[in-house]
Length: 391
Image (cartoon, rainbow, N blue to C red; front, side):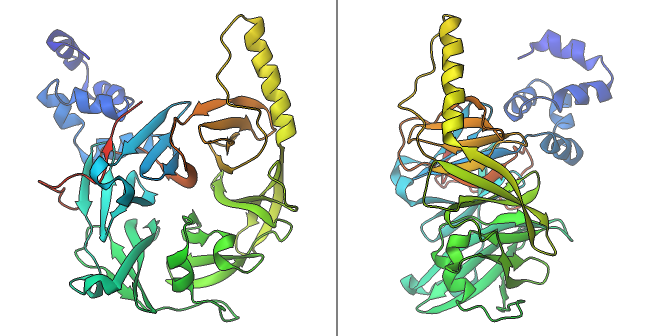
């Protein structure tokens, strides 16, 4: 943290150089620099600077667990902890462009965890003042590519009737969307019914939302929401995969992992090769016996160097969940307390400690830090749906 003299010396530099320094700082340090001088505050508060800073941020996998949301960095955790009074009510619903969609009871919020601001989202009209018969659930939070708008997709349920709504972030009212399907064969299950009951987050590819194969209940099929046509359709996925299925994004493309038999020690990863033709290609084979052997060599190297071995609960025996950290690394959840990092070649790269919390899950959502203010007015005088701190 520079003192007054240091700030004066830096201010003698050309403005372009100062901005190039500030834009490379972590989000938390940018906030501190705003308190150093008025010129730094002004420089870091322009829309151009904030957008440029946001674009430099890494895309971090998000982990969710029973009232706690955390983002995984390079071996570090960043939890967003809900207040003790409402811990069991907080639900993560989506992430997009540095913002989180969060619900607490019947209310939904957009939250910026970096600047610790949140705003209450306007609800569909049929959900206001109708009592407890109406339930609502956000099923998607995405960027509409043709317009660049951020949009929230949610479902309201009254008795056995379902309705679909889209809220453009910044608008004061969601609009109703008539249900249409773009498939040549009719969908056997109503998409809104199926998605309302689903606990999976959608994966975005080609601007569309894709839901986990377990959601459909039909082997070899994903549900897709076309964000331009605003309609649902089916999509094929590799029929070779039948067990332990996970849908995620890999190198910007839709990917699915799973196995052909009922095992939690071996998984294959397939990646979408041709989106329009729905052609998938086999990409990687992950065998935990290979990863465990690599891990033992890693621990042996620590012993040879007389360094303390990383604490581990037990051998790596099964895959509870999996996600992508970057283009070359995978995250494998192998216990309640630890996530394993390995290369796509099965080489062990380390362990990430996730603490004592039970029920932690990799969400396949991503977060890029943002210091951009919310488009809605931040809440005043209300308890935050969660608080955030680094560990």
